Length: 223
Length: 218
Image (cartoon, rainbow over all chains, first blue to last red; front, side, top):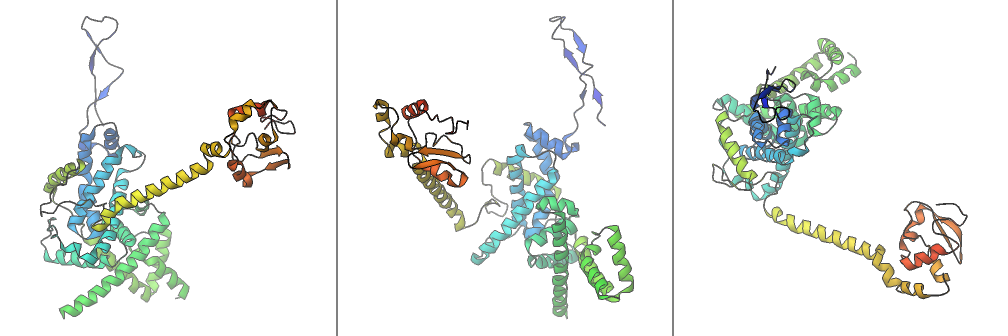
């Protein structure tokens, strides 16, 4: 609960010029809350009112999540980094048109998901000329990345994900990796709740099939 | 166990193992799994694959990378192309790669040119200049002493001032007083426009443009 303070303002009328101050009892100004504690909507509202310095707080709050979703979708750290940045650029450009009754993170994740799908599409076109091999990928610097088991598990998951169509992959990542609710995913992907549930159903079945195939292959390789 | 019960349960399993079913349906599925070994086996396989996904933490970056992320983001917002730590320059994620990028401008240009040509063509067909070229003798009406001629009355006086979709009443020699409704509105648009002088003469004629031939207002 923000504490109210009483501000002293110069009296403009009445005893003008005497320099006396009167208590502003009607208009009580709340103490400034730390920007990190403000809700997303409040931060966006202030950005819309011209305080663009608060945009940094929004970026700091969501940059890793945006990167993580993008990485889950595209499976490449460079692309995920670029997608996360591009998403924030688009948010920054269109922040004035943001509807404050909606959730900010839903908007951001939608942009990230769409950019990821675009990137996958472009990559499938670019594969013919081998653009993926031009630059080495960023190293995995995530905490605990050095664990060999974890590394292997992640590689296997990425391998399976590449065989899943992007619309199913997006639902799977948002629901099972990032734990978002189906209704939230429906808002992000701009489809109905039933469509999300249907895609989730298909995606889990697909993942199961591919995972088991991968398991068998790994087993045969080890033996 | 009935085939239908198994079929229904199998359909619900992917959502059941992820906890995405409502309580009533989840109870139904659970009660079936307790008695059907085949479905229970299927459920456990699905559950293990979902657990793999849920147990693998998402790939995140260390917090100290934020300053680099922010710096690059600011540079990009100013239209600069910063250099990555691996030496490669940024390609905006939304931009197409390779040769397709070079094609964006000509494609847009071609689309704009096509649009301009279409609008121009439409303008020459229906625009105000068409009347001037087809009926250049508008001014001569002003000097004709006999008032409204048959030729002038041939064209509906309110031809271009009528509202599209509204019924249009046409009177003149060789034409009954008839109503041209919406399907015939192209006729209205194709009639040449009338000049001010012509309109003034017609207005003073017995059939006023604001009045229908039967005396009612439009």
